[in-house]
Length: 631
Ligand code: BF8
Ligand code: SF4
Image 1 (spheres, rainbow, N blue to C red):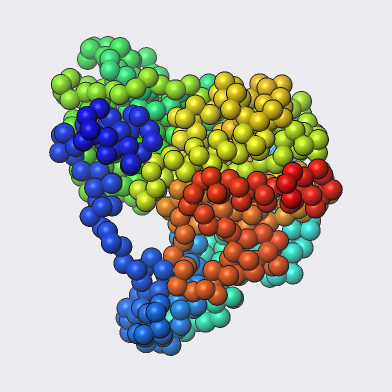
Image 2 (tube, rainbow, N blue to C red):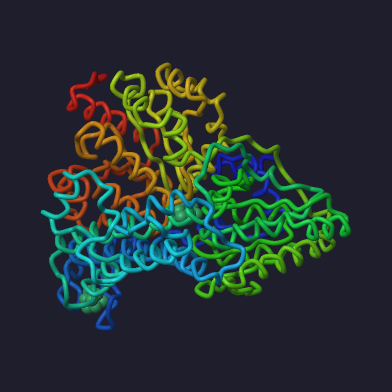
């Protein structure tokens, strides 16, 4: 790498990323980092949450230095404007996850009606288990009948007829009682998002505390509602993840094969593409075109879904999505929705890569649109794989560069898989926590963000936590970062503290567990609920925490809010746009402790963040009467 190329080290800690950034620069390809630089300096009003364009009497802004206007045209002050903006972020995040969940319920309903060829019920036992939670009679019913009834019952959770959404019942009793007392038990998944949009219209909820409390309810409607449904139905349709080996980084792309990347979030698309890639006629066509095979890989969360269930390789996380195309080795990228930068069309145009959008609700400039629905998904997938294979001959070998060797990863740690690894119950984990060999656990979740050197926050924090005997569970783009950094192998136990090394070593698992995509954060909720119930306490009493060191997305805000509302202390790397209201900041970082028993902390430095999380875990241990270090 030349000296000029060294500048890319400040953008990403990943070797494959640095090399592809250098290639992009040589080939005149613009990336997210170029566009980020072009946007600086960012608008201070927007960064602090002090601008409002909720109506056309505005837009308005509040002067944080007290010299200019302190109220919008309607009279809203800094507290109201910041709370409303945050509320709308939560609503957008909840809507995204929950609409994804609804798409899966739609597939389940159509499978029941025999109108979704290519999809089946892979986990009838889980179907029955979840149906029973929904109060459905399971005896004497065949799987398809039950699937239809469960889909209808889940759709009721989306509406506004219920007093509370069904899967809240999974939370420990003290937590449910607290939500009832606070009036934040979500009643319907869509209802809470819709109500947030209503409350934040001009002239509705102008009490900033009330807006933020509803924000917690809205977030809970995602965590214990839409996202939980998404995960459960994905398991029912596509299988409960079990420990599986895979590989990660741009080295998973193959010089001599047709490379297809799936990008987005919904396994409804990527699962059918997976099936189409292994059809004998497609493999024969690939050989006819001079390729040794068809290499399907994932990026972002749909990649996580495939890695968790099938061990399909992962090319990278959010900030790698453009760089994967810069390899010049990708015949086709198939996208569904969320976190897909429209800029990838410009990158693809520099190579032979075909881009395909598949969702009726996510179209992009410069992409061919091939719409997937449950009734035609398999046919569409076969047609796309055929087109990708045919595109292999258009590849320019002079432009191809696959920068590194793949890194092995162990994935597939669903709650069911973890329980199985522990002999059927959470007992061994509880014992390890009680004995102090494992001090506690942290769920590290979320994205990359060009404000932060790619993967730096994730890796720094994770390494420090495991070295201190804290078990890490991760999802989403973090899971790619830690896998790429070699932390999801049993060799990584060498970097763990002695207790964690002993416990994970005995179970044959790495110190960092991949629990899935972003909707799969609910697996963490289910696990902490089980731990709290076993210890007869609330989630907020447990030595656990959450963290999103490099988050960028509204979905991450919603996840962080449902973690906190569920009683999990949560660290954020980047500060959300709330600094314009000291009152809101104080409530989020301190006051919430007295309301829901947990609050947020913001710390961009991963070393300092690790200290915060470790101190929190040790304090919780002490309060539970367990041994505590340095408190
Ligand atoms: O839902 S972690 S960048 S890909 S938002 Fe997006 Fe963030 Fe990645 Fe998945 Ni989650
Ligand atoms: Fe301005 Fe109020 Fe309208 Fe917002 S809602 S743009 S603060 S007038």
